[in-house]
Image: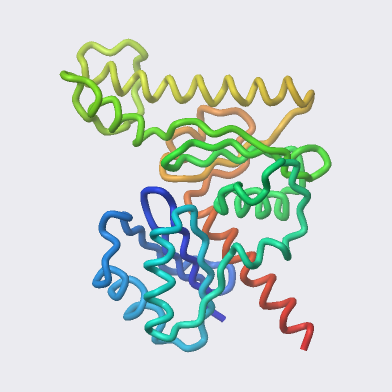
Length: 256
């Protein structure tokens, strides 16, 4: 059984094809490039010729998910929406307005809890950098949302007269000797310090130690600089969607 996961983020749509637990194909489409020809190229022709495929769609951008849903319906391709499957997930959520939680964060939290049980912080480097906490009882206890790296770099360049748009990169030295290296150092070491500081704050507030899961585009840059990292995987969210889809299909089969 093949499962195709579609994760609509604020910047990109991540599409991943799985055979059982193994990802066998992965592509990202920028939201600004999301036109019918791109969808046809990356969905219809590549994957959906196989009738034995199950598609799950997660989204934090309603306008983009509508484009994808309309495309799937027009082409008569069966799919499942994560928002309809969330109620089947066995996880207690200690957040007041549960309906406003980003679907990507719910997937990360549920998958992390299922695999590693408790005392976890999932840090996701996306358009926003998010921290989600699984407490000592295995409950999703809430988290932190901070500006994402690439978004912040873009805003810095757009809102200043002379500062250039630079590529995020790891730097050896903290002190930059020119504008480019100063910006790169500020973002790299600034984010390292922010992550370390927030993990320390969470640990102090909860009076507990936590294992760290890193995911998102820049996760591997930080994996050797943060203590107690047990996983650094850019596909963690896609794997979570695949796991949720498999669980749902298995439960539906058992009901027959």
